[in-house]
Length: 332
Image 1 (tube, one colour):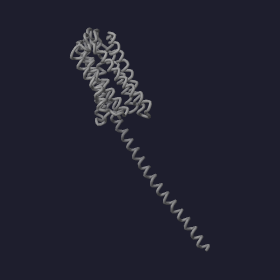
Image 2 (tube, rainbow, N blue to C red):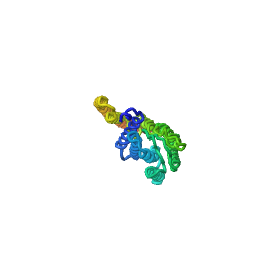
Image 3 (tube, rainbow, N blue to C red):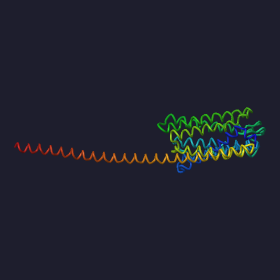
Image 4 (cartoon, helix red, strand yellow):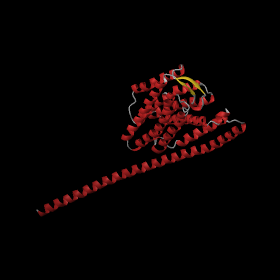
């Protein structure tokens, strides 16, 4: 346990795990009927489970956690493809779901059922870094990941070039975050292991924070998923959970008490921030409703004025026509 408290990778992976879970559940809960929100919710949960297996490799450095990390990790790019299709308004068919989920399920089974994916894993550390020998199925795992990651980048990049307005901004944030993370993961977890280099495998579970940050920026600046102010709730919830868990990993009682006091103080401040954010959102909604109401009233007044104007002008025209007819009759 003391060693864990000093391991920055373990702490970052724990943050990524909590962040993924909170963000996925929050997005899903805001609009469960929307396909984009449902798929991202599933993506957030599967990413959190995958990251948790990487975190567990720091607590119990056993080969099973490395195998689980690789096996469950096969589902992450699959849901990444589904999310990209939904974000770019492309159809998600049953065939596409089968094409990506079937290989992921097979790789999960192969990973935990034998030594086809990982023959030997020693000196395991946080994030799944280890020294060992990869199995004969590793090239297939790498090919699957590169195919799925390439599909995600292609979908996002091609849609970005055609998109306009707010959708273009949303795609850009995900393209940048997903591109950076996919590149790191491809190199450290799938390309280098083919050459027997597994010491950098932990970077994939750490750099997922980059994707989460860009997703958060997308929510804040381009109203991704249709939510905005809830970022305060996300950050407060994540930090509160982290501060609640951290004391259990402190090496002595003094530090545990200190972290517990920090948690209590943060909870108080966080509660105030959340209440303020909700109040601000409510005031914003009330202001928008008032503006919309005034706009509707102005529109009605405009229509009434236009109607009155048409009636007045029409009467004036008829009066002028009558005067002309009277003159013509008088002249006769």
